[in-house]
Length: 159
Image 1 (tube, rainbow, N blue to C red):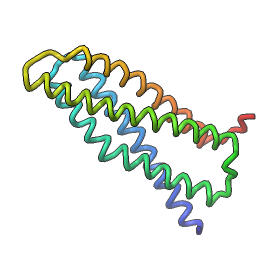
Image 2 (cartoon, one colour):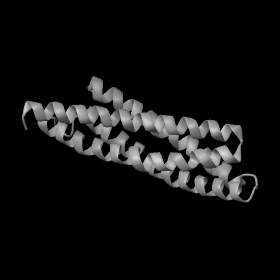
Image 3 (cartoon, rainbow, N blue to C red):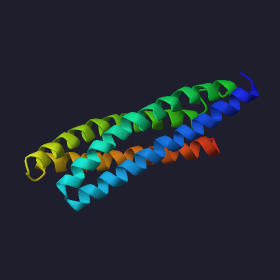
């Protein structure tokens, strides 16, 4: 790989990290605020678009992170057993697992909000139970990504 390839992959890696984190944080903020309002119509509207945003932006950005991360590790000749890389791999697995659960929960929440809105009912207890899980898993995933950002920049020796 040439230096220009490295810069291109690095740029794509940084941009996709920005899209991943920014879309996730923005979507989470809007759904969190809509949920706090208790307005079923608003929750129905926002939850629909949060799920769409995850498919359009978050999913591709996550996949791009994996691919470009691999190429950057290879190009720079890092040892896959370096402590900061091992920690990053664990954190990306944690963040990815959290995000998959969050996505599944968001789809359930969206469907429950749609049902409540279309039948003029209040949101069910199941919706609010899912919302608590969604919030907790979102905090786990975002914390993992913040830690990954630190590891990518600082590359500390963790031993």
